Amino acid sequence: MAKKSRTKSRPQTTAPGEVGPRQPCPCGSGKRYKACHGAPGGADVYVARPFEGLASECDIVAMRELVPAATARLTLRADPQRVVRLCTLLPMAAPAMVRDSGEIWLGLQVQHQFGDPARDLGAVLEAALEGALEEGAGVVGLTDPPGPGARLQDLVDDGPLTIEVHEGFDFWFSDVDGEERAAAAAALEQANASANPTARLTSVEAAYWTNVGTKEHLRWVMPEPEDRLLDALARLHTAGKDVLVDDSRFVGMFRTHGLLAPVWDLPVGTGPEALEEPAERFAADLAAALEDAAELTAEERAARSGLANRQVTLR
Image 1 (cartoon, rainbow, N blue to C red):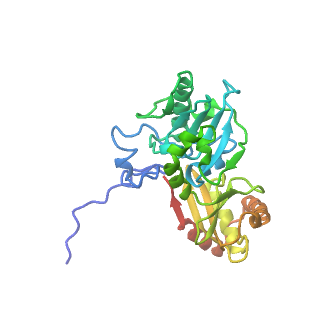
Image 2: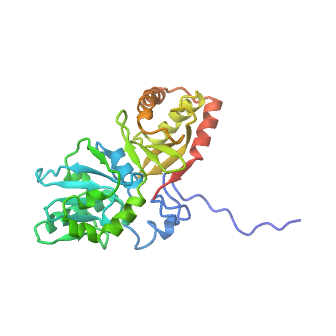
Image 3: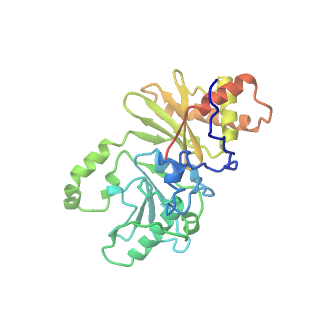
């Protein structure tokens, strides 16, 4: 007769919605929660949806996680005439730069892991504004957690951003002379080589086509709550309404900064123009599916389970 285990089952001490100490940290670091944001002396805060409330939340998330080279003009509440440019990536992944012209460039793709990217951006922007008063301020960044203070939402006028997608990073040197540009030619060439061709669709919000060489993708950041969106996507998948163009396939989703970004594989040669009308039609079908309050059918529940298993968390 087998011996009884001396280890008693422990009661569940994690409340619904909380993260257990041995579970993956929701920041996406890959560490367990107890070794990351749950560690003593670890980051003070973790904000699951840091850009919530901004009119262009989905585009900002896409620029931070999915788009290689893009910029957008921000308008400061306190100084609307000051030129502040939000950039996907800056040279050396700098958090911010004060240009010789006085413009402030704010980088999204940085290595900060302080728990709230919107607060990090606010702190960097405030530091850059102070640096703009000093000659030759150059690169601005954070070396320590910023602590309480203004977030990006507190510093800029909220309104839809005009996103400009670039073929590469030549915009880094749009206002410098030929000598300085030549000195950075090698770094620029390397950066440009890593930038896959990308375009933002015009018929819908925050949907980006990209060509990775062997195939093309559409990656579309959506603002709806995850549970509702999964239900709606399951309904469309079961109905065969998630095929954008011939031979395209809905392959899964990224989860990042509290949002889902569905991903489609596309045949090589599709291009962004061919996606405009299908994406607009899909958006209309999705809106109708989101309004459907009926219980999911068995087939739809199976589809939902399959979709939930095809999620990859970024950060």
